[in-house]
Image (cartoon, rainbow over all chains, first blue to last red; front, side, top):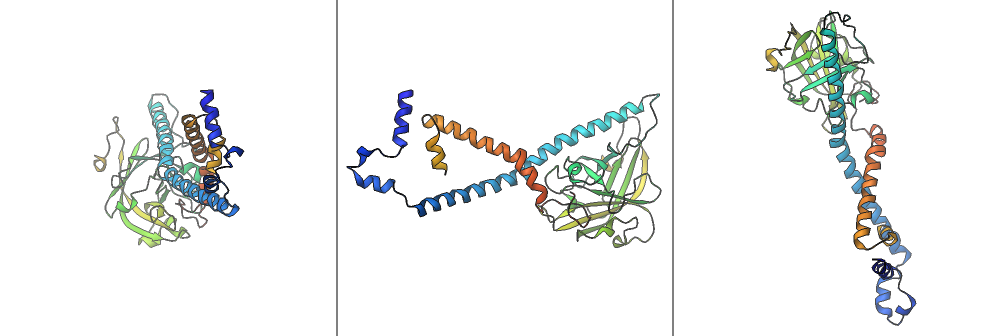
Length: 257
Length: 57
């Protein structure tokens, strides 16, 4: 083994001086000009850059989903476990802790299963594969509020891609929000496929662009568009249709069956 | 560049190939674990909120 190693090293080392009598092959291989060497290194750097960019795409569209799905499943389990604990007799009355998720969003048309909803739309929390409700620039109402706009954001691609299929949501489709005790059933009434990211008016308690004039119980979904970029924002508005009490078996409302 | 690394790896061809593979995997690990998470928020691909800053999301 050692002998073969030495042999290999010698084979790859610069030709020893005894190779001088045979100059032709030596000239063909060895004395590379500084220009040729520079071009060669430059080419290798270009190839490397291409590979790194390719890996970044893999990271963005696949690996972040793996991490986010794992994290979201864990946090969702925690919330459901918490609910089950509170259901037991003698448990303290429900208080909404801002650290916890407040419930789950179900959008059959998007086909992404249940999406945990938590407070805030910071990058770090949305990256956990959840949807966040806005605290700024316009504070979101919550589903159980008398009036207001429940405004949510989630990723279109990567990090769970919870709102990836937002374009499949059409007027009349149900959007269901599940809390410990109540199903809130919303119906989509307006899509805004493209708007500026500066258009914070879509989050107003009465979003004028949706055509609504009076205060009501609205739901707003926001994410980026077109797919894979974030030049614009995609908005979907829904309005509360009815609520249903959660029964003992957590039977989902007909919209989810 | 890569030729230089190859010439400076010890062992025969198979050992060098194995070491090269390990080096490549180490690079991918560092990229996925540290470099990409750092770079991602700096790139404008995944801002989902309407806040006018493009910061969150």
